[in-house]
Every structure is written in structure tokens, then in C-alpha cells.
Image 1: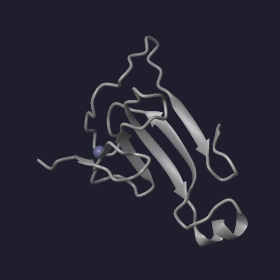
Image 2: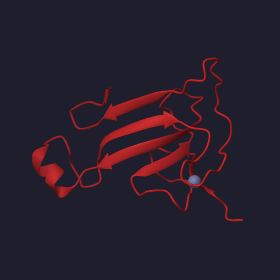
Image 3: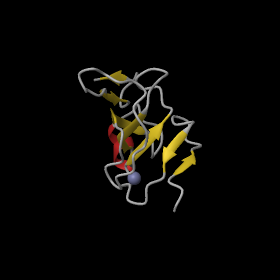
Length: 112
Ligand SMILES: [Zn+2]
């Protein structure tokens, strides 16, 4: 069986990413981020990176590939291959998961 996990060298995801063969290019599934505190479990992250056109329209973006925004949600399974990643680090009584949106397009990062 293919090893679905690998160590990442992405600066915002220093621990582990789910190496899914079906994962779209603008989505990451990772564990070890700090979006929801130090005990953040597996999260699905949808993100948008800057293009040349974005650089011309926004003076706060420096390079193609800079993050413009990301939306993050806790998950327990990969929605693209069904792999059970592992239980969430927390076990909310109401069954809810944490979700957040971050906007990097301005001078400072805004949590929406
Ligand atoms: Zn997967």
C-alpha cells in the first residue's frame, strides 16, 4: 500500500501533510498547524495563491505564489480518498469542528 503521509518542508506546515493521489492542487490536508492552537488536529486547507494579475492589483503582495486567503476546517477523514486520518485532537461534545478564514491580502493578516 502506498504511504499516504510524508514530512513537509512547507514553512506553514512543518509537521505532516496527507499525500493524497486525488488531492486538488489548491488544497492541503495537514496535521501540526497551529490554526486552532497547539493541539490542532488534521485540517483541510483551501487556499488561493497570487498570480501576476494579483500583483498588479494589490500592492501588499510581493511575489507570485504568495497566499491571498485560506479557509481551514478540522477533518477526520480525507474527502478525496476516504482515508481515516486519525481522531481529532479534541472531542467536542456537540460534534462541531472549528473553521476559520484568513485574509493575507492586506498589510496584516485578518481572521474572518
Ligand atoms: Zn486522501
